[in-house]
Amino acid sequence: MRTVDLSQVSDQARDASTALAARAGVDLKDCYQCGKCSAGCPMVQGMDLMPREVLRLLQLGLLDEVLQAKTPWLCAQCEVCASRCPQEIQIAALMREVRYASKAAGYQPYPESDKFDDLFIAGVRSKGKSNEQYLAMKYNFSSGHLFQDVLGAPGMFSRGMIGVSTHSVKDTEAVRRLIDKCGGER
Amino acid sequence: MQKYSYFPGCSAESTGISYTLSTNYCTGKLGIEFDEIDDWCCCGTSAGRLTSKDLGLALPARSLALSEKQYGDLAVVAPCAGCYSSLKQAAHYVRQSNENRTHVEDLIEMPYTAAAEVVSLLEVFAQDEVKEALTSALTRRLDGLKVASYYGCALVRPTDVCTFDDAENPTSMDDIMALTGAVPVDWAYKTECCGASNQIAAPKDSRVLIERIFRNAQACGADVIVTACPLCMLNLDMREKEINQKRGTAFDIPVYYFTELLGACMGGTVKELGIDRHFYPATSLMGRLVTPAAPEADAAAPEAAAPVQPATQKEVEA
Image (cartoon, rainbow over the protein chains, first blue to last red):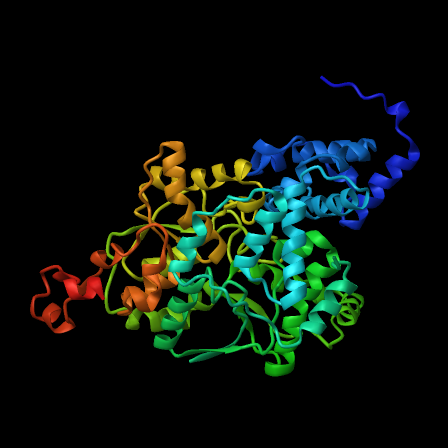
């Protein structure tokens, strides 16, 4: 079992954890570590911290460890944890808050997820709609996974699912302004 | 019969084309009108929420505000489960307080009162009135076809927002499928996540999610899996062959949109419904269709079970 010397945790770090959780509508004291969130999490096999460990570390004020964890970046946002939590803790919302803070702190615990979401929003910012063929292509180039899914693309093309043309909203400027206003500018 | 404001979503004309084709076929037969929201934009899906809380609200709210301007309080239907969940969460947030409403209106620079309901396509088809219309429109049946209804995440969660069906054991799709004579199987993965966009960003840790879904469907005796979401569909349908090759499994379970099965029973061809565009071969469905004998034959021989005829070769190939 791991031992944490709580006398070394600053009040400041504890307050920062509490404040982060509060922004997600979560009171950290609500969690009594039953583990239902982690038992039902479909992505837990790839995570370095189980969802309940994220809660526990935040309770202890070990914020920096949470900000450097892969877990929030591997969270698929399926919300099954929150739906089963007997204390109704908004765990998926908490994972989102951790991601915002992790990114703001300059950490890159799982660059692929960050890259994918950034490219997705950049695509919407440019056209107002998501164009899947360009998203997949840009992702492959910028993530370095050049040949991933390369077999899927011809199949999609022959099925009339993707083509070279893109779709777009009429008022692209309005969508761009909205995204920039919401902190999504790239 | 009914009218809705329609939010197609970004995949409607691309990866989700079969969903759009089969939905239009069904609504056309049933006389349900979908009026597209002019200049709708992407709902942002999880990428919006994961970028910022405001973006997760503002992108879907913009399209909802446009719908309100164009169609008033007419319910908004979003066939894609991801779009449905995003739109519904924005409407839910705006309804919670005047402060929330003002905040969203400031972000989108438009008035938005969230007067209109946001509904999924399942909800449209699950209404008694529509089920009655369906019952008379289904000219062919899928008697005995074992169907695993797959709802995924976004139709039932977050549970305080997506409330039209049970979060752990939803049954609306099972009930709709049963109208065709298909037999809904009891299975454990109805609401398990398919991995969503993690299948691109974190494939190594996510493929197992799809494998588990197929494994449970197979163990529970399903002939087919039926979905109500273009991303669930893509993740299952496009990856089934790959998983069989890489994992040594022998899944042989075609995946369909529930509207494809309904459309097939209303007389649609594989082309009209988009069943010929699947990755995993799916046209064998047409061979399972049976045409019930005319009611007069029943009356003449009330003791005998209604004779059924397999679909003709011409219908299969159509």
